Image (tube, rainbow, N blue to C red):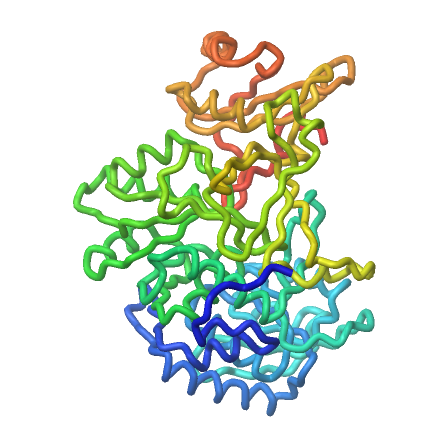
Length: 495
């Protein structure tokens, strides 16, 4: 296993590591738009009170709680309270619909629901899944609901987090991540990114998301930082707040950059922290350059997976446009199967990672695989002598055109450099003779009569077989809140 660097007393990676970090934490939680700041001493006292209430309500060690909370002070406080009881937490988005929670219950023995989503609360009594007793938690609008659901014997988990993931190869799964690996990821962040200590950090994405959970919540605990959270992303309110009380670090996913750019162009007085990190999906170079120029900030990439935790960050270096940065402390990388991808370029292959923050296992995996070894990320790329990672795409996204492999991200970058195209995605389609072909969906100030010029532009920049055979002009690409394109909803998508 990777040896963990860092000798700070707060960098404890034992089985109760998160609870120990919480007890040693001297930071705060700023609830953003509400204007209320909660200091660590007060939150520790409240967490103790809540854990007592949970025990009195019947929760016990080993129970699994579907944790469906938005970004309020309730998320970190109740998360800690439930860990103190010894519960396991299935981390779900605050607006997860009831039907999706029910689907999870078919594989995970969910004993309780902890939620603040008003539509779920209003439907509880009408749903067979939730014959329940309710527990109000002080003046915070939280409901704890007992379920009657029991579907399978579970392993003897105590105080761990279950993180849903799309899986390395697109198959939905649930990662088991205990307190040890949660704090290990925070150690890797804070020991590698020098700006983190005692900082004020704005987290715009939901805390159940692996990026926000690790970079925002967990890393805050071991760095005595203040985390700023909001129940929803409101770019105008965020910018107004930054004018009054500047922060040190902002975290985003790339689609948020467009909203922030819009408001900067309406009022040049808006400012942001000089350090902005993004994760979730690749940010195209044109948007990155425009954002950095308009705000006068540095935009840094963080690369990771739910399974491995954070892998790299390009903080402290300028790097190339497509660099995902150098590997963090306690992370190792190797590139394999290079021969398979020689059509794309030299030294390109499948990225394998070994990390101190590796998950314990997939929830439904009974094979007892050893995740101390190198893990296949499902990404294609290369690395250099400085351990900088250059991502080219996903293994499953590589398109086979007449026996030649094409990396869609290379073609997307060319399309996005065309002045009228604002968004683009390239993917496999099926031709009339049932062979795989390259298809592009584009958005922007583009009309049908422009397609010939766009195609000629691609021919001037790419080898012929890399130019899409078919172009679709769409009003908008179907994307998730984190910016990932929903390719199955695109025209003529062939999996």
